[in-house]
Image 1: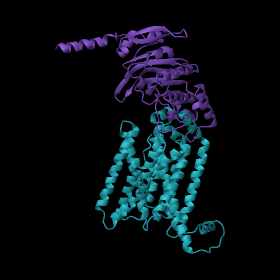
Image 2: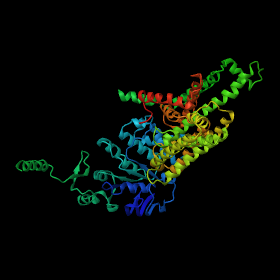
Image 3: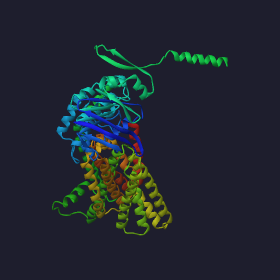
Image 4: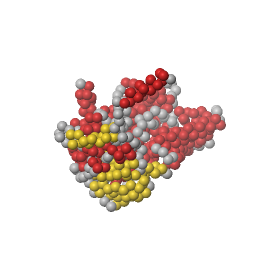
Amino acid sequence: MEMEFRNLSCGYGQRRVVDGISLKLKVGEVVGLLGANGCGKTTLIKTILGLLPVQGGEVLLDGKNIRNWTSAQIARVIGYIPQMHTPPFPFEVLDVVLMGRTAHIKPFSSPSPQDVKIAEQALDMLNISYLRDRVYTEISGGERQLVLIARALAQEPRILIMDEPTASLDFGNQIKVLSHVKQLAGMNIAVLMSCHFPEHAFIYSNRAVLLNEGKILHSGTPGETITAERLKTLYGVDVDIVSVKNRMNQELRVCIPSRNFALQPMQSMDRRKEYAFA
Amino acid sequence: MKTVIKERIAEVKTKRDAGWKILILLSTLILIFILSFALGRYPVPPGQLLEVLASRVFPIEAHWNATVETVIFQVRLPRIFAAILVGAALSTAGAAYQGMFKNPLVSPDILGASAGAGFGAALAIYFSFSMLGIQMMAFVGGLLAVGLTYGISLRIRHDPMLALVLSGIMIGSLFSAAISCIKYIADPYDKLPAITFWLMGSLASITTRDVYMALTPILFGCILLYLLRWRLNVLAMGEEEARVLGINTGVMKTIVIVCCTLMTAASVSISGMIGWVGLVIPHLARMIVGPNYRVLLPASILLGGGYLLLVDDLARLLASMEIPLGILTALIGVPFFLYLLLNSKWGWK
């Protein structure tokens, strides 16, 4: 399975947010989508999922345009993991995961024992079987996000879209949730993940795509794509990218702000002096 | 320790319990049903009641007063069935809407069904229509109001759910104003009290024909919603998510609205305006069996039917004069709802 955007434009009504981008996604790879707030990441994702109409160009799945596909047809191929959310009703975790089977269930039917088995396997794969009978609204944010990944897995998609899956998760939960992303790619799924930290793209993706003001600034392996210069263009801040080794002797790249933090309090003191003299 | 207890509570909430709970609710409804026959201005002892009921099936010689039979079959039976039917319909519609709007404070008249039906009835009373005419006008009025709401909401280019609620509130207010207008110009000695009493809601003058009339749309709505129970669960996660999970939310929303409107309009047309049932009962049902529509819908039907039947019994018995049902449902419903909010674990967050 291969997904391709050809000269894709999207936006809301008259407003064009993403302007003619082309990109290919192959099964087994994780593509990290980086960009500032409002650069069009979410708009692009909503258009791929069929929540917004395509404004120009096309979205192709194995060469077929999905413009006229029903939501069930799309859902059988593309899974989606939203940002952490709390629904108003206290569904059980198993029911939430079973909702991933909806596109495979006939309109008047309910999940079959076979569907329950698939949902349980999905929970098992993420090591959260213990959550099966818990109430979704009462578990922790990190656990909820893992449940949403299980739901997407139960959907048996070939392409998985994640919209900042770790937004509003604490430090530990971010690592716990993201550690499963590569595992997903190993299951013959193509993953497109929008990230809000360049480090996440370095560690968890095979390819990084930088989106700047609705256009692709650059795309390629994270190492060669994410440079200090391009991050400056993207986010308007100066950063240094450094390589460090972790305890497992793996080399990782991290971004740190290039700024003399020690200078700031001095400046404010200087200013106070000026006021004193004035 | 706290989390361990929490986990235990969660474990207890398994599916095996749901079957039990439904069974208990069903027995309660049957109990109230039998009790309601015996209660009233003309008391029928339980033994005699069973005999009279059995005589319809088995050849038992009638050794009782003919009045007993009239009271049971002509007066109480249609009224009891109407109370169950209306209570079940309003609760089911409320449960479906609360999920669809992702809001547990929504009631079946959110899209203006009750106000529209009230307007139709008021207009029919003003023009001195027959009882049948009033009911038909009420039914059509309810459908018309919701049709308008839905049509307008499609033209609003924002959040579609919010658009529905907003246009529902506006259409509801518009029809309420129209009701006031009719009341204002109606004959104050004859028509005005008739309209006012109709709007208060009552099952006092229910006939067997009324029950049959309301039965078809209500059964249609209940059955269709039950068939769609799984999709209602998914819809309760929010519109965008339901679409991404493979549901055609446009079609699904339309079906839910059609079902709920048919049920609400049919109920209001035979009973007048009865508030709070459709809001409180789904809430209570969710507290008992959880939010899964597979059990929530049956629980709402049984609880709603039993509840309205009980309240209608009170309406018959509490005072020497009948108390309008709509007043009682509010007088009982509101404190009860407040009690639930203050004292128990919420069925939602």
